[in-house]
Every structure is written in C-alpha cells, then in structure tokens.
Length: 73
Image (tube, rainbow, N blue to C red):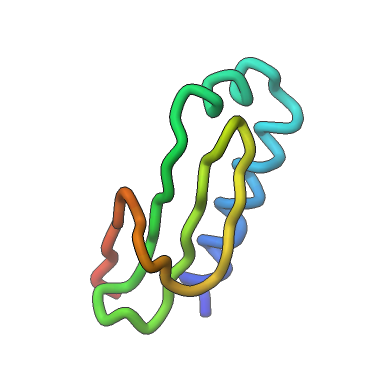
C-alpha cells in the first residue's frame, strides 16, 4: 500500500509542477512517452503518460509502456 501511495503522489507532484511552471511544461512537450513503475511480481503498478505537455496517470499496468522501472519490493 505504501508503494501505491508513493507512486500516486509522484504523479500528483508532476502534474502540479507542470501547472505551476511553464518552463517545465515546455520541457514535457518535447517528448511523448509512457513510463511504468511496478513491483517485480506485477502485484502493484502505476503508469504515467507524458503527452503534449500533459501528465496522465493511472493505477495498474500498461499494455505497451515505452519505459518500465521495476522495484524488488
């Protein structure tokens, strides 16, 4: 549960930063990709999509992420 809360808060921090800082939002527009963060056993995860300067985040696993970061536990 701590892991999912941490990932949720990370996504919220990215969204907030994109709203508050135009320079950061401008940098986000440079690339469009999906990053997935998950436990190695696939029991928990969250994906974050960066698209046209916006940040979208959903709980669960993405079917086709561009980047995956695995955590042991």
